[in-house]
Image 1 (cartoon, rainbow, N blue to C red):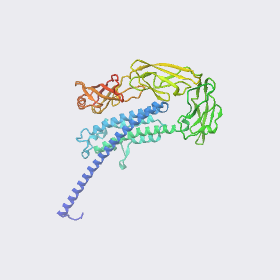
Image 2: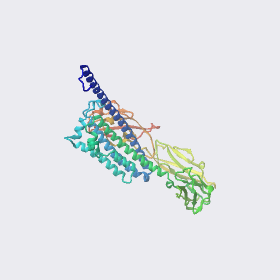
Image 3: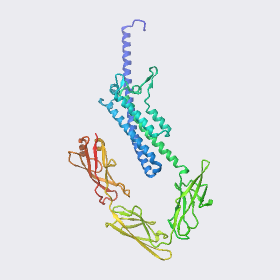
Length: 515
């Protein structure tokens, strides 16, 4: 057929066949572009979810650091630095994608993003990389090197290798073409939607790196904490002091008090503890408390682990033997003050007397059992608590103590759980929630906001109900200019469960508009 003369009919058939192939290729090209667009949407969803997860994990790590500073402070400091590096780099990549889409009429019209002109103009000129292109490569390399420096040479090997691979900008080999610069190989001549997807993929790698660090660091610390070498053996007495000749009552327990763990042997004050007093996770104390004065129980727990005997020294074994009491002991569980508007827990006891033999009285004081009391603080500035009881020998003892009565301190206003002076965009502010907290207060109290006011520069003050901005406030926020300071004030905060209590004035929040 190729060698002979074609008829007019055959020429028409061949022409129609070529047109059909061209149309098919165009249709396939559109499908590929749409596939890249859907892929980018998946990346974007992953970025949002992984960012939220990383923020939550960092917050949990902060709590661990506060609870166990010796174990988690170093990890938290590294995590905070990595989080900042990742946030800065992700912010740069967000801005880069915005530049890519600057001339796009419809950000979701993927089939119209077949051209490479926009990216090529930003990154290349006359066959060389532009300043913008060099900046992009430099940002990737800086993030990579800063993360590797943070991890250190003795850091998690698998994460170090992943960081090197994920953010490698070395020249790439392309068959007969040989090596090609990384930026040219990945971005020159590619459809716009493909370049956007590549940047989004890089953002998922950034978040994955941060998440892997958290998982490895916290998981490693948790694994380390379950080792027997991290247990403490502590003396726990049933009461704090004993009378001369009185029998000891209490036990020695492991710090974690795991009922599945039993010591192979225990030595206390130089003597081996009998087998029948070694229980699961504890040793039962017995014997006389001794004479008046300071005493200490010393010794060692021994456990078998990995074929070795692990010694755990007994700590906290100091106790006192005291004379018979002639006055009561009163202590405030929270502080040496009581607060109006909240139930104040108190412990009241007389050493040597059972709780049901102790009588305590004061204005607003109520017993809740087992030596525990709750006080609803009165209006006056001080309250006196009187305690009395009868000793086994029939002698009466009594005592009293005066406590200061204070108001709950002024709440602190918040926007998106942050107080003071904040910076955010108009869109973020409009979606934010106004709240109130009691910072560094001894009680964990829940507050709710019933209303607040908003002042936008050059606009009348707007009153809002609840915790969110109403339509008028949102319109006012949208009219604000970059650099404007929007003030949220007159925040009406109330106690959950006691809305009748009048809290002091809540501090205001100021938000500077960034965009």
